[in-house]
Amino acid sequence: MFQPRSIKHCKLCGGAAVYAVPSDDNRERATCTVCATIHYENPINVVGTVPAWADQVLLCRRNIEPRHGFWTLPAGFLEMGESTAEGAVRETVEEAGAHIELQDLFTVLNVVRVGQLHLYYRARLLDTEFDPGPETIEARLFTEDQIPWEELAFRTVRETLKRYFEDRRQGRFGVHTADIG
Image (cartoon, rainbow, N blue to C red; front, side, top):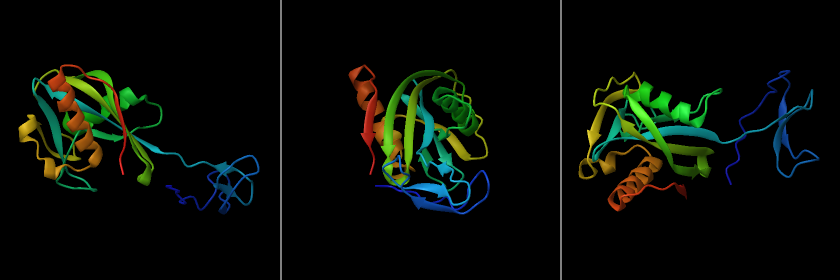
């Protein structure tokens, strides 16, 4: 089981934090040795889209690490104060400069080993004009047979694209969940 141990100091008073099982809990938590505040570490949410134009999907070539130069769907970390849908739209605009109509939630992927939850929505591209931001080298449309499968940045992207094209062939889209090792 993934157990982060990244909290060294209390976010409230700055005191040293130690990992211990609180009396009303069942797992170790970062606990302040000064003010006794318990700090919880929860999974990070990654949100994005599968932007489609006819039989093509939009991919972005990463201009940042990890996986610089590899292809990905437009996605990134959910920010405080936004819904998963709002975050997915924001990331699509920031990374690809794409104009989209957000559709249904498509994949929910647990990446337990790194403490992440990836949520991808389907999206309909409103045009094919892209203006990639600084995190993207280029944004480009691909048909299924053109996708650089060996150059995809993340397993969650591969899983989402695989399921997207399977659903597209069947003529109906569902919500898919999976655990990614």
